[in-house]
Figure (cartoon, helix red, strand yellow):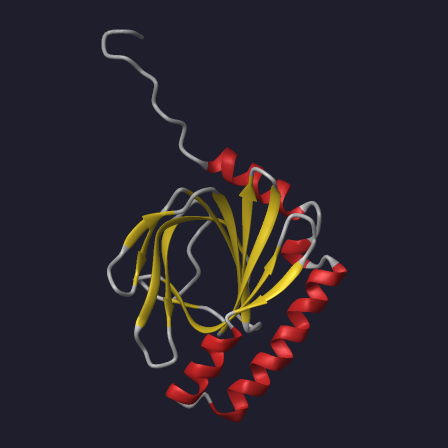
Length: 186
């Protein structure tokens, strides 16, 4: 299927290696598409966990997906500054239902002060055994984590200082204006 157009809204679905649905983001606006890249934005979107639990994201966020890299990046606009949550995951695919990827447990969080933290190492080890990830996936994820860390260190892609401002402003320009029209007034 072709990539959605800029301004379209899509759902995002994250799966686990065993095929189970992990998490769904209900509504993300596409702000940029290229041959291999999709950048989206959302603000307080409904998120549904695989077990059915629902919650709403706390802050505006940009999402960066690539068809060739085994990671995706969430840029979060927090009161204390920009933070990043990076999922080690398959490149995305898209169909009529949603943008989809397989989440491989490992995450890198980058705090507003630049501190980096690798998360969920124990979950990765457990699921690697449980679902038999195999050496090929393990090797791809190891290489992908190194590439992701290089992107962070070199301020490449979503980590470039101008990226959050440019794409969040684009999202603000594209969002429908809330209708403040009152009945009877023109």
